[in-house]
Every structure is written in structure tokens, then in C-alpha cells.
Image 1 (tube, rainbow, N blue to C red):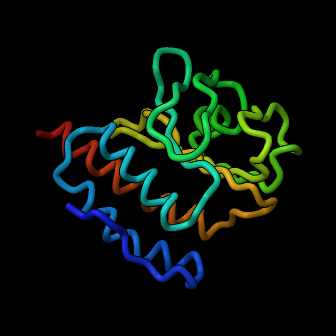
Image 2: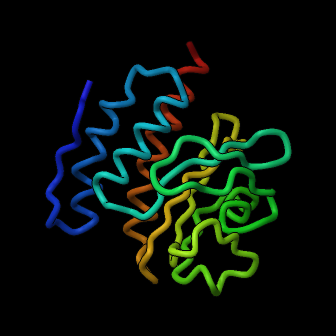
Length: 167
């Protein structure tokens, strides 16, 4: 099992995503515990990019509930129709918010958060399991490069969920 992720700190984000993707795949390959995989993915992303906050919210009954994360204390529960996470969950689409203060209904879990990207995580039948939430203390910090890179990371995770279900 890997104890570190190797990447080029001075590289652009696309290069770093390209470098960490196969390492993340190896890290979660064969691990059937969802929480362990979510925790390691959050750790990889925080280590590689130094994001302010990286974590997962998982669907539990009628809310998103905080899962594994890296960063300061976070909101514990989010209604499906609230905030960026709820919007990504209900629309089933990645949401990039350049300035969270301009997003209607934004939930300010930490005042230091200035921009956000949220990627839905699907199970095999197309149901949304939860979301990957990444916050930055910089306005306009996320782009399509992040949407693509984080989307590929989430697809790796979804692959482990399908493999677990078929076992």
C-alpha cells in the first residue's frame, strides 16, 4: 500500500491530476471499504493540491451527511435543496462556484472558503450516493481542469463501488 503520493508540486493542475490518477487507482484498488477509500481520496487531493477543504457528503435518508474529509471542521448535515452540495446532488451535475458569496443559498461552513467545486458520486443504477466537495480560500480557483480531474477520481471510486456490488 502506498504511503505517499508522488507528484510534481510545481506542475500545472492538469499534470498533477494526470500524475495522481494512476496512484489513486492503485491506492483504492481491491479495497472494499467505502469509508477507507473516501478517506484516502480526500487525503490524496489535499496533499496534492493543498485545497482548503476536501471531503465527501453521503446520502443518508433525506440529507447529505458529512463523511471522510481533510480540513477544518465542517457542516455535519446538508439538506438536498441547500447549498452547492445540495445543488450538485439534486441536479446530478458537477457544480463550479467561482465566488461562494454569489451563490444563492450558499452554506458558509467556514468563512475562509471563497470558491467551491462539487462532483456527484453515482452508484451503478445512476442513484447519487453523495458528493465530493472541494473548497478553496481563493476566489475563482476551480476550472474545467478540476471538473475533469476530480471527475476522473470519482469515476475510479464509482468503479470500486460497482466491483463491490458485483462480488
